[in-house]
Image (cartoon, rainbow, N blue to C red):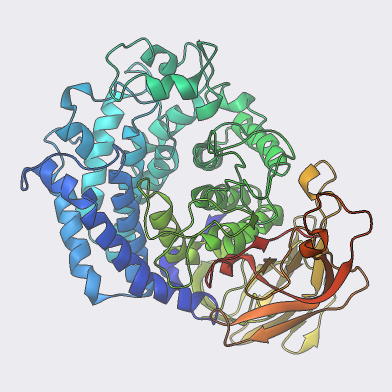
Length: 628
């Protein structure tokens, strides 16, 4: 089964949870990131490459990609929340990018300014194809949002150059940091140019072959950027080993998520696109195996990649809390992959993970004010973790901005004769089923409530299946159509399928039970043996000092028989549902100067948990997701 997402520009979001976040994205995040890109030289790098400013390249060699992602985020936001305060500046940035393009189509400010004679010589580490991919995505998003072709034309000229350069019977080459694969698919779909799809297929299917492109690059003593980082990441005991960049095996033979997590997520997302477009069963089978593996390497928050050493994966069930890397970009990449797996397979298990990452591991990456960001997303802190206004390597801020701006594309999907509701988000969507225009309207207070009303408005009566996802966290639900209770059976794909002829103003009321749940980790996750996490609906909760003056989260125990209640507080952290209950903690002062004590006292205490995404938005302090 291959489905298509209803695109972001056919979806309008209007609800209490996501509408304020999209407004903040427009009013605070995007202008803040534009200013950061300006003051750090990221934008002026393009002007220098264009010859309209003088000076040296500033920053890290892949800084172009931050600007491209920001342009993509702003383009989506033009559709949802137009903002005249930065729209003219966005046009200027696009003009500057376009002027920096070289006569042959090449566009990379670092190589144009610093090492123009060394193009394509260090694909493993220098991110040329990665930056190109983000340019392509920006061009597509800007065209879809505005109908303007300027940036899309720039993207196509560069894609044409890359297609002339790399491929079968051309120069061998692969992206060291993936991302161009899924970008080429987007470019192919919007332009109809088959060469771009073929190039994406080449980049996916030739990865992992021997001798490796990256292994050959290591033979170059004059490698751009030097050999140090390359050897560190790509060799073990002076022998080539490609796991860091998922180059250890051909794609169709991969079964284990390895290496740099963001690279992996982007590769798997692009591979899922190729499997859908070409029917490559070998790639689809590998993706099934990889998904089964990532389910053993996934934080309860939807974070992936526990290790800071490689910014990525280690081994099954290794999920430390305090040292969790769980990069924001990796959770965003997981959303990309999960969405494409759903479109390929039509199974809710992928959207369940998408939703977890969206509401937890990705959303925690930006402050409620929209101007501070997490690069890493730990599941416990002793008070030393804080969001920052920007980073030297600033991939995460524009990534979360483009995710929030493009949220609409993840809510619905369709086949020729069916519609699918994946996420419960208030607003409307326009689709065409069996040649009949259909408008869907959702009314809900999700994720605070599991009550969802969906109104179906076809231009004329039309028969189709409406598939409603029943989340894996929901053990009980009921549904009515036009006020009449329905016998509801969930299919093996996790969807409730309603097949009928729909008339104007037909309505469905779906009620998803949303109790407070205690979640237990697999016993092989040693750090969480005997511990629990709290979840309500799609939200994972955590405990902060600000709400729990007795602290001591490392010893906090929630009695299994103790009460837990969900209470909405409209005044706290933008309006959230709290979980309140009782627990016990050890009082460290009982130990005095002793290291050990035979009979410590347990102190009864009231406890409050908040959604994980909202932590670290008040004073600094301890935090924990997992408690006893």
